[in-house]
Amino acid sequence: MKILISLIIILLSLSLFAEKSNHQTFIELTKNLRCMTCQNQSIHESDAEFSLVIKKIVKDKLKQGESKEDIEDFLVQRYGEYILFEPMFNYKNLFLWVSPFFILILSGFILFINLKRNR
Image 1 (cartoon, rainbow, N blue to C red):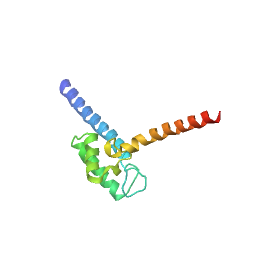
Image 2: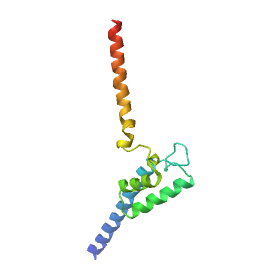
Image 3: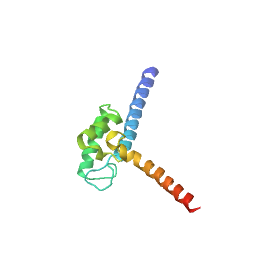
Image 4: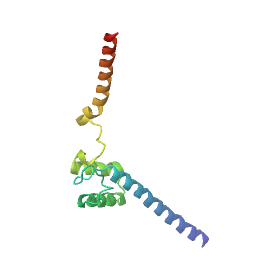
């Protein structure tokens, strides 16, 4: 009897652990998704109808056991990359990721040349 009770307690705690893990993933996902009807607000912060729909989709997909990446890919296919606060790193937006470094290096080079000429 003690073994049976122990097994039941272990199984219940595993279920609660999975729900807590899903809840943490849910919060991370909704904070990184943009509400398409609000201005610069995450799905997590927004109470708009669109964000409520996305929250339901995310909850359902997490309950089905889908990974964070699978859910993000699904939402990007459905709504485009604009739904992500942080754009993906791919060839389409390579300029977005590389341009700050290029501008920084170019500015440093121009500053170096100007300082050298003024001496």
